[in-house]
Length: 459
Image 1: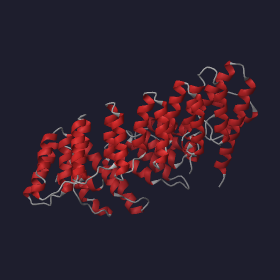
Image 2: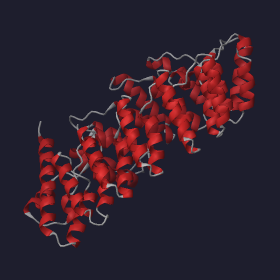
Image 3: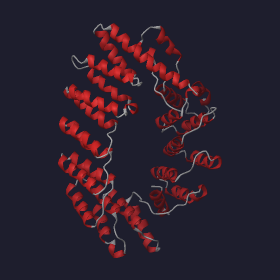
Image 4: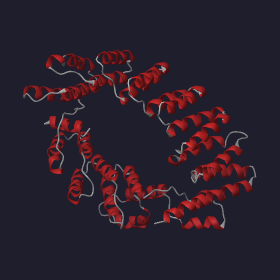
């Protein structure tokens, strides 16, 4: 029976604006600040408050819906997703919150919300409610029931040690318009061995996917030697190993910190004209860097490009993090440029790591250039916490003026920094008696918040 579970696991392999409470944070009395007393609470505040309400209303007899009504005008799809993630262990209350949000006029749950709720109910072992949700999704057609949802269900049953229920879930897939197929990894070496032997005895089709899952289960269970024996017998059974087969051993050896064996498998793959995917390459790069082998990591990046396996941002960021941790400014900046030359756009993590490094070592001259490039890339809008670098800049002796300049640049871009950043800058200015400068910056911040609030009111 476990075979079916394994098959399933393998195959199934508006607008949110961050408004902060101006009065609460800065306690700055003016007519403009009083206006913000009437602004709706910011999403982070709503998430905290709603999560607290769910926690306080766990009893089925509690009037949770009545307590939630005060938030009805401020709930967005993003808010719902964040609350569900926050309340992962409150399955019953999370489901009631989900149903309550559904009743808000004009509100519609996102697909991601349904996926998160399925995971929450599974993690909380609320399987009866989970199936009621799936049936409602099927009948109302409010959200497509995808293979990914059943993969979440199988994982939930697996974590709850309910294999028979997982099998029943597998058998019900067809009821929801999903045709199961393939063979997935068991995750337990002993059980995988029993299932694999049963497949051979019953003359079931044992393909390369079945072997790969079996090998992965053995490796994860610490039986790499046994897995290698099975691997060597694959050709005699008419099964040729593929790239995924070799990758199973690469990941296992990386986990065991056996770099020599990793490259032994990698060399064998090359001889067979097979290539790892980006994920497997990244595993090797990460392990090399952990062992201070940065040059070998660069060689792998070059190899990936040479063989047409395009490195992703994670590939470069892993090496970039190494340079930043070792305060290697020139190499970090050179790698940042290489990313662009290799057609891999640096993301916010790339820039944040470099900015923090430059601030930490006091290279403010280089920081200005990186900041300018960061703004020109227009990735600023994805990452408010970039301005948290001012938390370091404000504390540097004699650099308060530069902190104010970057504050103003960010506000001019229409992006209000975090209120915690504003408070730190405000306190520094107050401490130095620079009241006019403080008022000027707060008015600028006030203006951008007001502009965003007005845009929120637009139809």
